[in-house]
Image 1 (cartoon, rainbow, N blue to C red):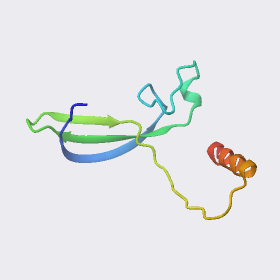
Image 2: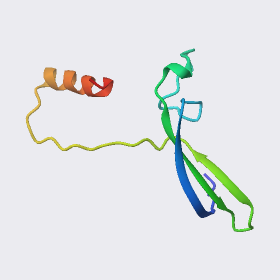
Image 3: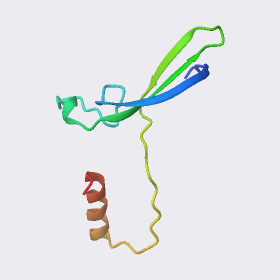
Image 4: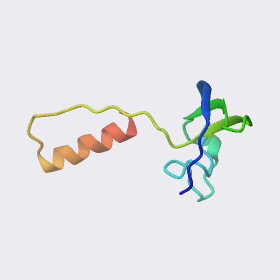
Length: 89
């Protein structure tokens, strides 16, 4: 993959419905994008080495949390608990 370099001037983010640029969320199965949760898109402003202005919208940078668990997991209960966390209950 070719590299794209730019000098960073400003960075922010916004929430948007998933698009084809968000393959981990977007489904091409006819699901209405409006029914899916909004996801973050990072917006970067800057300039290339030749001075050309740039506004890049970066998709796929999803936030995450890591929680270490040192307890014992029983297979049946563990899979159910993981499924509940993914659904957000």
